[in-house]
Amino acid sequence: MPSTTDLPVSQPAPAAERKALGAENCAKAVALVEDARSQRYMAGILNVSHSTIQRVLARFRETGRNIRRPG
Image (tube, rainbow, N blue to C red; front, side, top):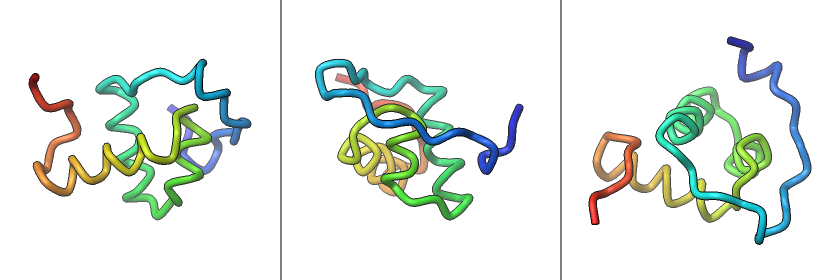
């Protein structure tokens, strides 16, 4: 697996083309924040909005887990 520093930064997709993050990408977001990456950088890498990254990281800080809440 490539290092997080080797990942290319892509242009964010239009809002209509963005998808919710799956468990794998949530784990990548947590790994990137632990690697001291910015939230906007993570959003570009994972092709999601900045606010999606904010919610994922807030959930991780609150629960200690990176999976979605039930319901």
